[in-house]
Each structure stands twice: as structure tokens, then as C-alpha cells.
Image (cartoon, rainbow, N blue to C red; front, side, top):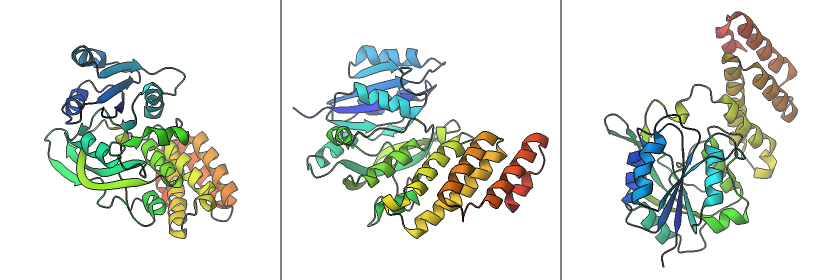
Amino acid sequence: MKPLVSIIIPTYNRAHLISETLNSIRAQSYTNWECIIIDDGSNDNTKEVLNSYLIKDTRFSYYKRLKTFKKGPSGCRNYGFSLSKGAYVNWFDSDDIMKPNKLEKDVELLKDESYDFTISQTQYFESDSNKVLNVWNRALYSDDPLNDFIMQKIGWSVNAPLWRKKTLIENNFHFDERLFNGDDYYYHIQALTLKLMPVIVQDILSMARVHPNRIEEFGYKAYSKSIIVYELLKYQKKYKLSKECIDSQKKMSWYLLKNMYKHKKINHGLSFSIQLYKIDSKEFSLKKVVSVFFVGLFYYITGKGYSYFNKV
């Protein structure tokens, strides 16, 4: 019998889009799959839309996120993983599309047990017009994957890989539930730090929808990204990050810190400043971080001085 694939989908208020996603899964040439949908507290008619799939096809299942898992896609994915029964796992988003041959091609590639996961190409498309746009990243892999992935010289979407579940269990590998966005980016970084081995296929096997309500389009993302940057700078020696990569993360840190204050997240900004100072008191000197803090505090109180963020 062909091995079971567990497709795990977090969803929140995607009733108007999720049918296309589920139809693309139902159209897979590889048929031995289960699709576990985890609802993060939708207040639209998601449950009603899903009912027709649950009744007609028992391979679909629907759960509401348990409170023991934090709100957000990471908590939903981790909950879905705890319910999964497959030998392989494919994380997927509730607004994207799976090409008909994706699972079949991925499972065939993972017959070679020296590989832990697959990487394939993802292409963007516009939600309203279905116009095809650029691919996720022209380069999927390199000779220096960790540094290049962090700097986005290479990259792939959360939808792209098929993971060997045994590998994930052995490495106690889960999504970081502190992250509301950027969770997939950090998940893939962790996979590279663990030196998990991918098999690469250049084919476009998934499509990522571009629309106004994508999580990546949320206005305030600095807090989640600051957690990732802090972890990378803290463990730069352990991960053997290149100077170019470290410098890029320091530059990103200043951008995120200023962005926190621009969005009047004083507590987050202050906490992040202290973390950065402890890591590198030369780059993030007391004078610099205090200057940014007082500009942020002045802007928080008066609503004035926005332009000064570019001067500190």
C-alpha cells in the first residue's frame, strides 16, 4: 500500500478561498492522503463551507484549535501534527493551490531514505485575475544553504516541502508558537541548522495566492521578526553564520527596532533593545538604543517626530 500523506492546513476566516485549496487537494493524482484542517477561531462561515467536503470525502477532517496550543498558524500546525497519522507531512495554507501531481512527485522522491524533505518551486498568482506572477525564489538551494536562506538568496514556501514524519519526530521539530508570521521562514532555518537533507525538484508544484488579507500583509510584523533575528544573533557562532549574514541581521535589527517604535510598541522596542545590547554592546551601544527609545517615546506621547527615526 502507498504511504499515507498528512496535509495539515491552518485556517482563519478563509471561507471565500478555502474551497479552491481543498479542490486542488482532492484532485491529486496521489490519492492516499488525509487533510487535517485546524480552525483558529473563524467567525465567518468556514464550518459551513467545509461541511460538504467532510460529508463527501472522509479523507478531510476538521478541528478547532485547542487552547493548549497558542493562537496563530504555528499553534494550529502543531496541533494538526499531533493528530496526523501519515508517514509524510505537507504543511499547506488555506488560500493556496496544490498542483495535481505534487504529492505523487514528492512521495516518489522520498523513496530514497537518505532525504528528509523535498523542495519544489512555488509560483505566485493574483487572486482576482488569476494572473501568474513570479516564482517564490529563482534559486531553491545552494552550497551554503543556511546563510543564503537567512539572507533570502535562496528560499521556498511553506507549501513546497513534503517532510518525512519520522525525521520530524526524531528531532522533536515543531513550529515556534511565539511567531504569528515568519513561522515558516524560521521553521526552514531550523531544518537547515539541523542539517536535514532535502531533495530538490525545480518543477512548480504549488501556487501562492496574492490578496490583501494574507498574513504577510498584516501591518505590524516586527515583533515576530525580532524573535527570529535575536535567535540568529544569539547563536551566530553555534550556527557558524557568515560575516555577511551577521551584518544583514544587525541591519535588520535596527530596522525592526525603529519599526516597533513607529507602531508605538514601546514595551516591545525596549525589550528588544535590551536583548540587542546584551548580544553586542558595540553595535547596539547604550547611546544608540537610548536615542532610538527617546525618539520613539516622544512620538508615542506627541504623535510627532516620525521623520527623526531615519536620523537615529
